[in-house]
Image (cartoon, rainbow, N blue to C red; front, side, top):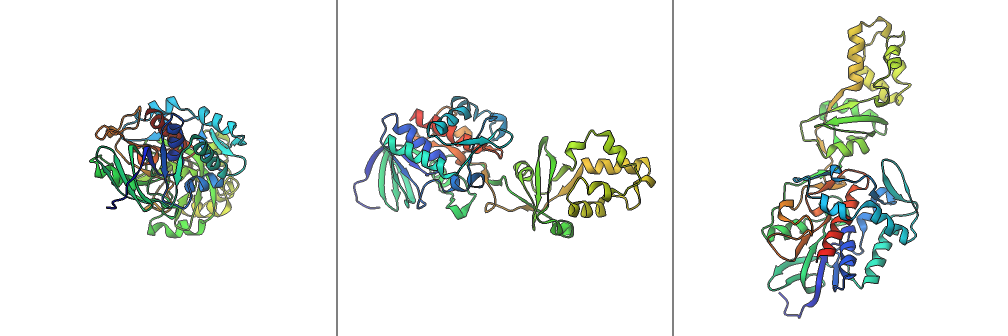
Length: 394
């Protein structure tokens, strides 16, 4: 290694995403000297593309129930001490206009760059030094941490790992956070793509491919979890909010159950209409996009007029509409995943401070930890809450 004399800081934060920036200014506001390292050419690249460019920065309904983890209680402490309303207060302090889109999701009226600018401004005001184009090459711990990077070597009393997960490799995602954990003997759980589109099986290609671009509201259920949102057919399978949500609970080989008419599940009038003289296609094409009605009815509905169907045939059709089962081959993987499921094992960390139980002064926050939120602002809220807990504790 180089013989240069390392620059000294109280805290070095690795990763200039939402969690990293938030933790950096939180610690700096408490009088700590803080260096924020980002390996991309600028901070906040994942924030930039979030929410279709408008950043779904929190969800006012966030509770521990909205997160997947090996320990469902782990996130409770941090979430209780930094709430969605606390982050909204910060957004309002900076004069950023926002709105609730649906289901508690909060979006910028303008651009996600406003959130990045807000975090950068908070870092600057707190005296954080931010160093971009700085890739971590190796981390050691002697009396203090030694962080060897492409921009030099730095030393600190505390090291915060806020490096995110494996999703969005095109934005510079890497496994450095997991490698740092393993180097210090800290367990990392099995990792999987989460909030990710599913791909159809080859034998289903003739059904799915012609539907690319079609979207319809569904209620999808698996493993005791249900989500009622839109499903979008793609050239390779299915996507859309309902699919992204359930994908975090899905495992290869599992079938998903779809209610294709979630708003009409208890409608006697609709069931009665199925006993009328029309064909299933004539009725369902009024409720669904025509292309989907045609494909689904060809495969699942009686060919004869429904007036000629027996009671059991009508019941079977109704059951299929509200309990259609479909299996999928796999997922689109990390390139299309919104998040990484799994991460640094929660049993290795203090839920109050995010500090390693094995290595004093070493902290892990945000997506690199085995806490994964649902779609809809929950992962940002975990980033802010875990960063706040860490920044206040260092």
